[in-house]
Length: 166
Ligand code: ZN
Image 1 (cartoon, rainbow, N blue to C red):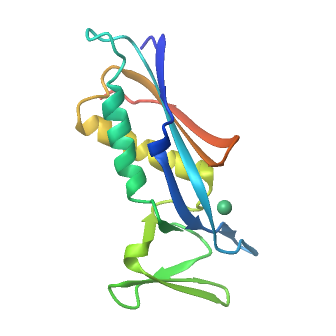
Image 2 (image 1 turned 180 degrees about the vertical axis):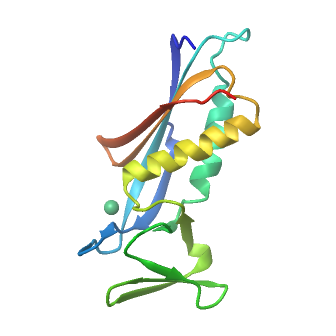
Image 3 (image 1 turned 45 degrees about the vertical axis):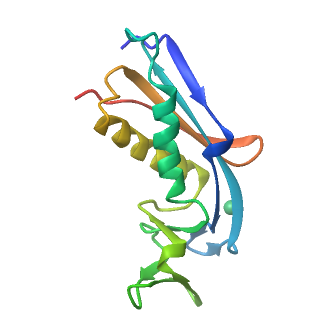
């Protein structure tokens, strides 16, 4: 598809605050937090409405994804070095070598990622947003979708991909 236009959304309300730590074999960051800023760019052709895609819908769907992570501790459930289980339904336990965290389950955002890096968060939000746009039948005029995640001002990870047509 010709993608001559793009829209970009990076509003104040697409921020979220979360705790996380990066961990891989032999290394673990201490638990800490960021005020993340999410940005979304949608590339596509102009529709008969004069828009590429409805700004309001993009903001609403992105906010819904961000709300599920906001004020939680991000836990990457596909980690190859963390052992994650539920000692009881209300708790999530995360073990790394000799360290153990036990958190209330409602304080945790368990995400299908390997590391809670800005890069993997950008790809996760991209996947969730593409699925949400698809379920709103709003993908047909979209050529590509780009999601950026910044852990702080001036440093963002970007995931961009053409949207599969089906
Ligand atoms: Zn961090």
